Length: 406
Image (cartoon, rainbow, N blue to C red; front, side, top):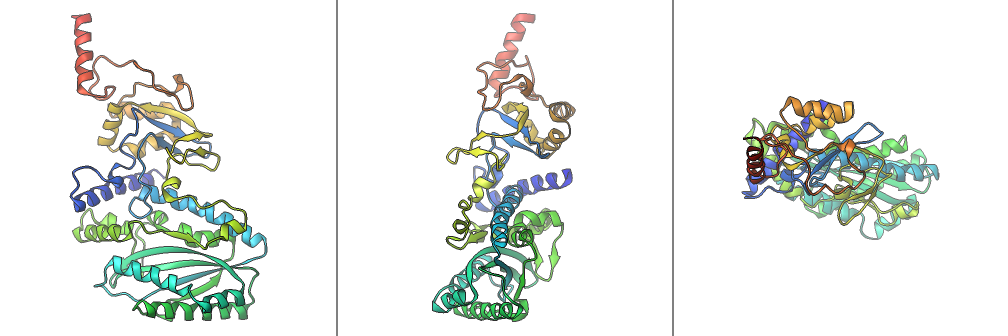
């Protein structure tokens, strides 16, 4: 778990550098600031009863496409969100079917062009009287669509994973009817956007369980592919594979930047209108909210500030600005979370001492939750490793020490 967490944090840093360099930014962009830049005077470490840990007081980019840390959280939480729907649907006796929709692509086609082509084809497939009649004939009450992308020898490979919800389970013959009708709609729509597709790459099968259906559209997302390691198949590499390779392959870095630019603002997951409301479920949360540190289903979150109003977690450490800056320089963020999970405050303090980092707050001596930092916290007389917000504070403390001791 530590290795995977550390890899995600390192890849997030790598993505931030690539994107900022490509954009020629003088100030760090959202991904470069994610999990690094403070939103207040201190940074907190919290643990929860489920065995996880997270930081509070940091910026979060909320990008499922370009940030492996946020993408992992979004994909995991989106899976639970979709599973609530699939479980309610199957409990009510509905049918659930999984379709894979692709189109042919060439190495010279850009990620932007292909993203537009596959998304527009799906829109057209659901338009017109033929789609209305198909839904009525087979009892289709809605769909959930996930957009995916890989890169291989033939260039970018965008494709759709679609969950199809029917009012009742279909017989084998009716499933064949659904497969034939959906292929006809998809192939026709692809031609209308000047593309082509291969029936051999088109698949439709029944979901065995509610969990399997949810995982098909949500867990297969960008956030989970990093856990699979070097994901290679006929379609090629995932975007995280490209990000990993960019450390020693400039072309892989350029491809990642092209992908990030093309998919900026794209929605990974979309629900048919009214589908969740049919089962009394709340509207899906945006990616940015799902990516908030410390998100749990038991938490109440202020959607304007992102502040957690209530939670069932415990704080184990609080870092001042100097300490946090040193943590960032030494790339200890993943190690701190792992230490918090294993041994709480003592383990975090031990890790900090090993790397000559210090924190002037002890979480056990502070009121919780939603405390306000004391106006004049105790600071060491001279602590270049941390404990001071600026060099002027260091010099002032040093002057006071000299007056009292010399």
